Image (cartoon, rainbow, N blue to C red):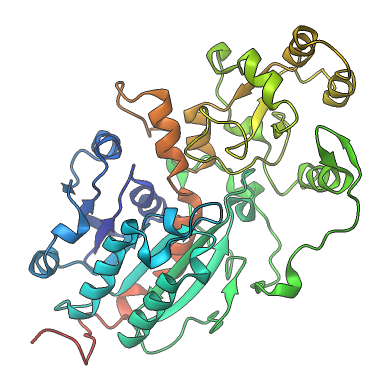
Length: 408
């Protein structure tokens, strides 16, 4: 059987490519496309032999797409138009233009791809762009399923809830397909043997699955009324939630993803400790959780990711409760006892599922590394979805065309 010919759009630092390798699906990336010059340098550093097109997607003609003769598309379009904390410009945001171009090109290809996998942020699922995506793939007779998934579902101690769509060009639906619904868990346990590509020990992953859980309004977490602030601006409910997460032995501890060595350069500056002390999400190496890391990590504090308490013998509650009425210098001295530091770029890459051999060119700054990783995806999640998508891929209807729109 010939390997799948994969077109990787919005290729970034190569998360999709790494996931494809981890899935062990016979495949060849015929082209990767991205306009970000820094990301392209990282991609070339890790995949020097892949054909990389450093150009806008709109700059690729229909004829050029046809010449690539691909039968799978992997893509992670710009998420800024759909983020919950952004302007949510949706179709009116200029950054959506390239994806709209893809949706225009897709039905007119000489040969439709057999498989599509798309990743984006939570919020995409309620956008007008998503509605156009669904209309387009339905018109081309794809079977599809949507998901909202986080790496914690695979036993990885990181929250990174993302929207995914997998689509297959076939007449029969997926066996787990739930039309009109968004699945919140993987449809089944997939036996991917990642070997050198995985950071996670698969024997420690969640062993119990009761079938797909459906995202409905009634399933959303309701406030229990435990809203009394105890310390660090955290309520009893928030502390209880974090305790439950840290007690979930089906999730690995953060220490399995950490680097050794001198980490003094990653310690939080005194002014940051003083200014943001009450806003920090603090975890320990033995914690089984961490917040989603964003592109602003390392430059901004609030909402960009967790920080690590490396002084594990110091009780955080005692430190924070002792801060009342202290002058700034003494507050800093107290907070410094926790030895709080940022996660390193390598540690974040580990949590995102990048393989041990993944690296950055030496000239890539720490700030650039954080920014690129914050815009990336979780390799393990995509690898498992690819395995689900491509199960029995040889039976797909290769060469099928969108009857009403195919080029003659």
